[in-house]
Length: 316
Length: 312
Image 1 (tube, chains in turn green, yellow):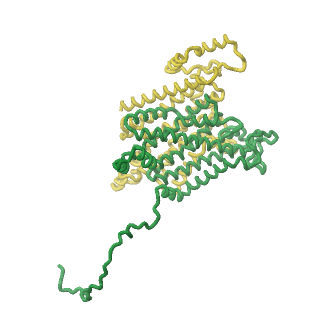
Image 2 (cartoon, chains in turn purple, orange):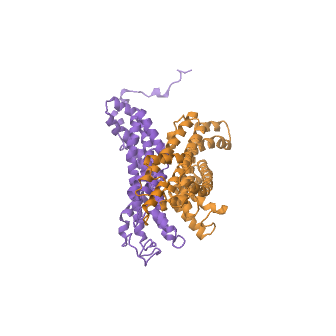
Image 3 (cartoon, one colour):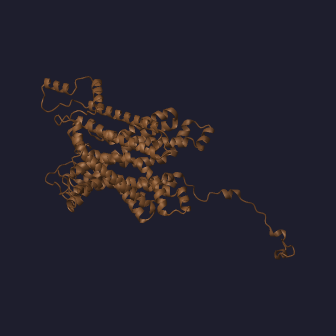
C-alpha cells in the first residue's frame, strides 16, 4: 500500500518553470559518421594484416618473386655456360650456391628455376581462372538443364587422374613450358568452376539480387555489379592455392624427366640431377630443395590467411 | 541406394572409356611409327612388323581391336622390352608398390586422424599449434625433397636405415614416411576442423548437460561425427600415394610399378606407358567409386546421386 501520509522530502523544493530548458534532439548528429567507413576489401586487408603468419608468407613471396626477376643478373655467371674445370664446387664467395656437375653456377640456375616455377604456377592458375569462371559462371547463372549436363561433364573430366593425363600429354607433345602449363590445365580448372558455380547459385537467390532485379536492373548489371564482385573472395582464395599445386605438379613432371629442356632447368630437374651425387655433394640438393619448399610454404601460409580474411565463414 | 550405385558405376565406366580413348588417340598422334630407329629397316620387315602389331589396319579398326582387347584385360606388348607383355610387367612389379602403398595409407589415416583429434581436443594449446605447423610444412614440402632429405640424414649420415631397397621390414620406414607426409598433413587438418565444428554443435551441449563424462562424449559423439568426412579423402589419398610412388620408388630404388612407369617414360615405350596409365586409371577411379559408395552408406544425408560438393 502506498502511504500518502509520508511527505516526500523533494516536495519541499519549489519547482518553477525556469528549472526547465527546452531542448531538441539533433537528428543529424545521431546519423553522423564518427569514423571513416570501411569497405569489405579494406576490412579484409585489416584482418589479413593482423595475421602475422599470412604476412610472413606474403613477404617471402614478394622476396622470392623479386629474386626470380633480378637474381640471375646479380651474379656475374650465367645459368648455361659449362665450366668443366670448376665442377661440383661447394658454396663460396665466387659461386654463392656452388656449381653443378658441369660447372654451371648454381645461384643463377636456382633463380632461373624460380622463374620457371613461378611462370608455370601463375600461368596455370590464370588459365584455370579464366576457364573456371566462364564454365562455372554459365553453370551457376543459367542453371537448369544446361547446368545439369555441364556439371556431369565436369564430373567425368575431374575423375580422370590429373597427373596421369599431364604425363601423357607431355610425353606426346614434347616437354616445353607451354606444353607443361597446358597439361596442368586439362583438369585443373574444374575445381575453380565448381567454386564459381556454387557462389553463383547461392548469390543469385539472395534478396539483394531480387531487389536489384525488381528495380529493373539488366542481367548484365546484376552479373557484373552483384554476382561477380560478391564471389571474388572464394575465387581469389582458390586461385592463391592453385598456384602452389601447379608448381608442385611441374616439379613432379621435371623430376620424372618431363621438365623444360636443357640448358634451362626447373627446381624439379635440379633436384633430380643432384640426387645421383647426393652423398658427395649434398649442397647441390640443398638450395633448390630449400627454395621450392619455401615457395610452397609461403603460398600456403598466405592462402590460408587470405581465406580467413576474405571469408570468415569459410574458415577451416 | 541401388540407383546411386548404378549412377556412380556408370560414371566409372564412362571415365575409364574416356581415359582409354584419350590415351589411344594421343599415342596415335605421335609423329612417326614405333619402329623408327637409326638403323634403316628394310621395307618388307617393317611391313611385317606393322602387320604383327596390327598397325596396318585403318584407325577406327585399330581402335575397336584395342578396346576389345582392353575389355579382356589385354594391354598389349611392350615395344622396347622384347616380347614382354604389359600385363606381365605390371604383375611382376605391382606387388611391391601395393605393399608399400597399403602401409602408407594405413599410416596416413592412423597418424593423421590422431594428430587432428589431439589438436582439436587441445584447441589453441601448444599441441594444437605445433601439430598444425607440422601440417602446413607437410603440405608444403614436396615428397621428393622430404624423401631425399630423409635418405641423406637417416640413411647416409646416421646409417639407421638402408639407403635403397625394400628387403627388410625396417626398409619400409623411410619410404612410408616420405609417401604419407602429405596425406597425414591433409587428414590432420581435415579431422581437426571437423572435430572443432562438432565440438561446438548443439548435441554436444546436450550430451554435456545430460552429465556424460568427457571420455564418453568424445568417443561416442565427437569422434564418430568428426572422422566421417575423412572417408571422402580416401579417393584422393590413393591418388596421392600412387603419384607419390613414381617419385619415392625412384629415390629409394624400389622395383615397383612406379619405377617401371618412370623408366617406360624415359624409354618412350609407348605401349607400356599406355598400359600402365590405364591400369593406374582403373585403380584410382575404383578408389573414388568405392569412396563415394562408402560415404553414401555412412552418411544418410547424402541424397541419391547428388554428392558433388563434397568431392571438391
